[in-house]
Amino acid sequence: MEQIHDIPANRPWSGLVKQGQTIRIIDSYGQQAIDTLLYNAADTAERYSSQDTMRVQNGAYIEKGTQLISSEGNVMATIIAATSGRHDTNAGCCSRESNTVRFGHETSYLHACRENFILEFSKYGMTKRDIVPNLNFFMNVPISQNGAMTIDDGISHPGDYIEMEAAMDLLVFISNCPQINNPCNGFDPTPIQVVIRG
Image (cartoon, rainbow, N blue to C red; front, side, top):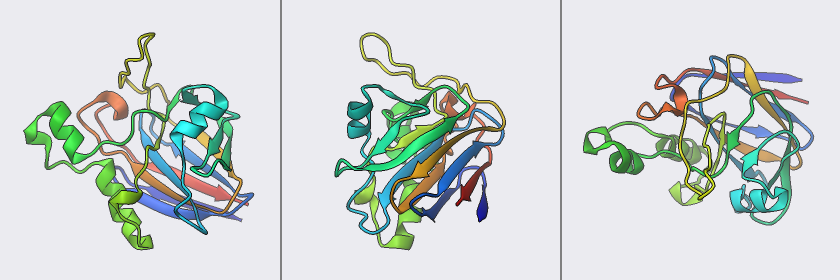
């Protein structure tokens, strides 16, 4: 069985991905950051842990073969395909507050990924307290030798995708990033597609 979900620019999405199913996230137009969070569908207190994921794989980036680890030390999903090179799990999601700090008070009205997550969480009785450091698929965040991070131009192309296989029943939340003040979206947010199979 295949489910196809078209996610407009700037918007959130959520869905259930059952154990053994795959979820493919497609960057339809290229250079689009896709903020993603995973939760155990049976108990949302267990959720994606960027720290444990980096520790287990001994690396800062998400790539083919990476196991995505939960706050309880369990494998939530494994990346089984990735056609674009670099995926971030350090930089977190944009918010109205961070926009204001980075880009000036005149940007405080702009919608951001944090607000997208809060909106989508409300469907499941979750709140902003449930937001944790997220995956940033297709977001190019080089890390220098001294540990400094930079949000740089995206390197993904139209049709690039990342695909993972669920190791448990997952609630997957996506914010199709609305950021227009830094180059993570090429300053032009675009639609994406999600395909669930299995």
